[in-house]
Image (cartoon, rainbow, N blue to C red; front, side, top):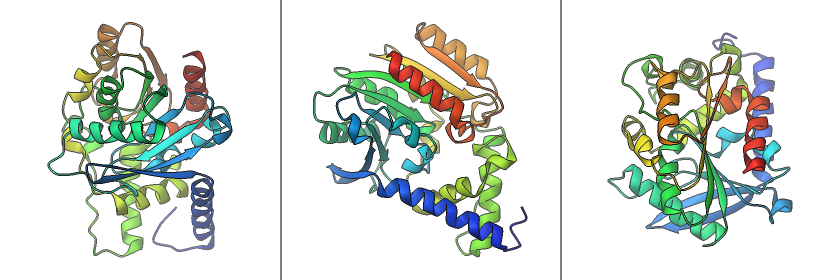
Length: 297
């Protein structure tokens, strides 16, 4: 679709995307916590499964809870699902500066104690940058964390070259239509493999998240903090990647070898014909894998 042309079809699809997001948001139960002056916003679904072990979702960099738009409606049928807006993202407030992976993970971990209570066991699923906090959270929550599942997290650090770095800076002074064209380029370059996967829903989520994002996460993502925090993990580990994930440049095999070496019992799933935002681009396959992991663990 050529975004220089405003037509009824694109307008209608935009309305549908907003409606889908708003409906899922409206069905959630909202909780907020305050840790060291940072107010985190949590959304919960699946209250009918309150007696089951909670599933906690961490989104990616410059994102929000809506990174899970195609997964929550499936997971909430069988699980009690909680999705947070990380510090400096979405509807959560900014973390104290200077921040590090450790300080951000501590905020989320303390917030978990508040929203879940001190003793309830839980499973953690983390996408992309959320993964860089997940290992640290697991160690601080070792008394009760059951599993960590990483989705699209560059475990050995995001490299400074490769297609995931070929993004366009979007100037604030441009018109909304001009911005939309540039955001579409970035979405296709970084987040999805198939161009058609960058549909109106994906673009709506991306634009809304970018407008709210204040956390600068790439500096942390270029470190080995995730690789190091996965050592001696106090729970089971599961990894799930899109085969065409550009953030894993240049070596997905090297990531798998590292995981096997430090955590021989870890599961490692690769979804064909999908990119970085694999849970959005291939939701049926990812939802089936997640449901299996959560049920078997």
